[in-house]
Image (tube, rainbow over all chains, first blue to last red; front, side, top):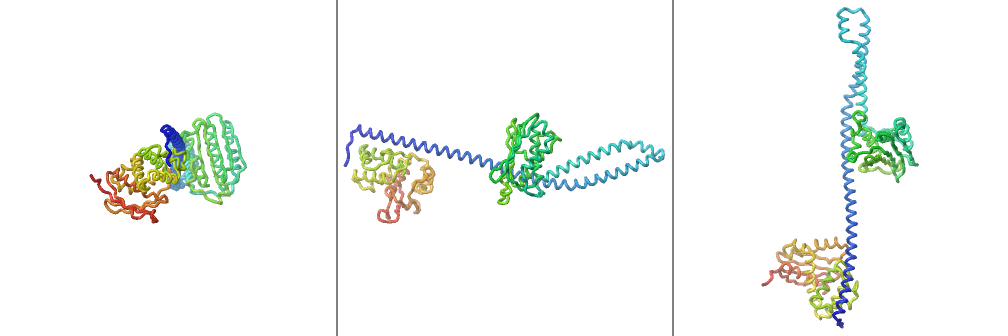
Length: 322
Length: 184
């Protein structure tokens, strides 16, 4: 049966229907807009994550390549260095013997020709200067040897003996060693929590902490603070070394662990400290991060797997990042 | 079922008949939102079936013819909203071949959870195409109308044979289509 509505009623009903339809459309639109916004947010976050992962991957590959290069260079320098050091010692011994011989001879009655020759070579000066030269050569060779040793440490061609290490104790040792150097211009704040041991080499870890703490101290021009803290994060322990010094320029953050990268004046640093630290931490399946705001300071955080976790699983190398 | 189908039905009834008829159809069926359909909404299939049943009752025409007419009208509306799909194809046959893989896939992305009929194709040569249609809605006559709508857009005629039909107890429908140039 068909009802016959008046024109006015029909339009009234149609109007109300359209109004309901409009409201429903608006609600759908609102919901879709929200979905779109959320999807977009997710996309932005995923994109950023991908960018960071890509950056980390590039860095890991670069560091691996640098490690190989460093190992190669260290090996190539090490061989000639060994015979240069050995020959220099022999040469020094020969020179000492010759020098003593000349000393004895000079006390003897020499012919006129002999006396003239002795005078012409200015023997006293030669002996004195040679001693300085040999000392400089020795110092130079020692420096080259240290660099080669550090390069080897960075490329981790040799791993030290491992044992269960108390990181808090290691940090305290490092702080004692640097105390004299930093006590006049840095106030050290310690906040060491109860943390499980890690599996590693105590001396190597001391070296890492020394490098980072000394870097922090050197970044403080006058007077400042260094905060050293430890905490447990699930199956990792986290060491944070933070300072309120000059900070690191953003463009340098990516290069800070590269061998020979330094901001210090020529002669004041080899630029190997942090790269060696990087190598040590990487070798322990750990991670080292750096954050910095120029003019406000820098923060290094070192994550190391606890001893228990170490025995359960091995972290992929790709986890290592800055 | 997509709201666009309901809004098109309302438009067709109001345009070809009158507002009074649509109002009566709404009054005779349990409708969502008081019959205020939105093209972006999704409504129960049963509402469309009821509305079409009411229309058939009021007009006293065979339901098959009614669905064919509505299909043709519906395609006119849809093609205005999504003309890009038409531009990508130069023939009605090529367009129809893209329905399952392209258009339905896009709708699924936009409106996850939308249910589609099963469509398969048998290419019968230059101007022939067989479509195998299967759907619990059994709207094969609506599909015929949609195909006619496509043909109209591509300025050709579609001669459709429907030898196998779900309404006759068959498992699916077979629509044999022959495209011809429009007779002048």
